[in-house]
Image 1: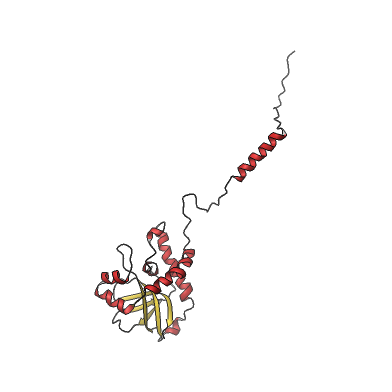
Image 2: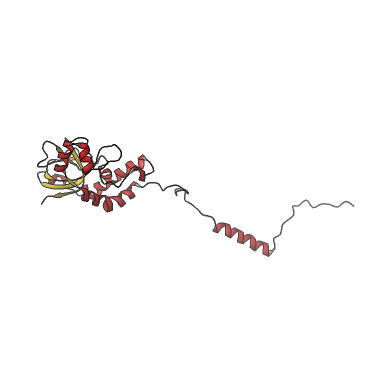
Length: 216
C-alpha cells in the first residue's frame, strides 16, 4: 500500500524555554538600539550653526566687554589712521589676513539729524573727518566681529557661518541697543558712543555702537 503524504506544511512548535529565550533576545535588541532624529548630527559631524544662539551667547558676555576694554578715542585713532594706516592698525586695531583693520572706539560729540540709517556726530578735534553711527534698521559690516580679536574664520565650518556670526552680533545690537534708542530726541544733544568700526579711509568713520548715552 502506498503511503499518502500530508500536503500541509509542518508546524514548528516552540517549547516554553525556547519562547522565553526568543523574547529575551528581542528585548536585548530593542534595548541596544539607538534612535536618532533625522536632524541630529551624525558621528563625526558638527551640529548645524545657529546664528541666533551664537549671537546671544557671544555678544553680551564676550563682545561688549572686549569692545569696552579695547576702545580708543576716535580723535586719537582718526589722526593715527590719517598719518599711517598700517601703523595705526598694528597699534590699535585687529584684522584677519590682509583685510582692513577693525577698531574698538569711543567718541563724544554732538548728534545731528539722522538720515538713511546713520546718525552724524560732530566730534571736536576730528577735523574734516565725517563721523557717523549706525542706527538701523539695517546694520552693515562685520566691525563688531572683527574688532574684538578673538573671533576667527577657523572657528567656523565655512564662510557662510562666519558671515552669519557677524550678522548675529549686529542683530544683538539692534535688539539690545537700538530698539530702545529714541533717535530723534538725540538731535543737538551731546552723546557718548562706544562701538566698533572698519574704516576704508580716514575721511569717513562709521561706528557700529554697543552703547549710546547722553554725555555728562
